Amino acid sequence: MKDIQTSNSYKQSDIREGRVVPLMEEFYTIQGEGFHTGKAAYFVRIGGCDVGCHWCDVKESWNPDSHPPTPIDAIVTNAVKYSKTIVVTGGEPLTWNMHPLVSALKAKGMQVYVETSGAYKLTGDWDWICLSPKKTAKPLEAYYNAAHELKVIIYNKTTLSGLKNMPRRCTKVANYFYSQNGVNAKK
Ligand code: SF4
Image (cartoon, rainbow, N blue to C red):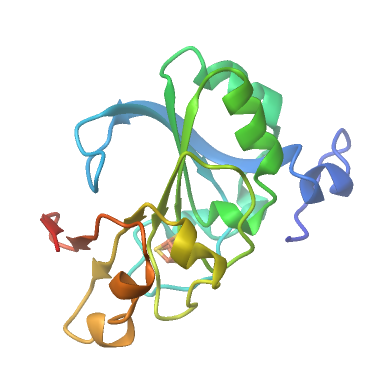
């Protein structure tokens, strides 16, 4: 877990234990890529990531100090107004302890999905895990059997050489590859 700046009203322990997270943005939209393309969902984008993909299109998410520490109760209150499906993304949301947020959303009857590089400890009882491995920080072992979907961002022709064994290791995945030019391609 990271040390991030806290306001007077939040303690570092609240962040460490996942009761407060750095919230970058939240919005209701249609999923635009991967297995659930076309389905409506409420997206919760959590700040903080040090995986360091040079082609990252959300670099403004990297610094958790740039995003307000937000109690998970506030996120849940907003999310339930919009959709039964919540997608938690980042940044790298698993930088933080996701157990409390996922549990609170599921207690309200939500289906809770995550998009993650798999580089950090797996926390949270997710309904759907989209694993998007990166060459700069390979997934932890726990993700291979837990992932439901594999999404590889193909930046150039060397991308797959470093990740070529992953489809075979992800035992319950409907293998999807996603290319940088916006085309979904099922393996
Ligand atoms: S893991 Fe995701 S948010 Fe982090 S640097 Fe890579 S693309 Fe960006």
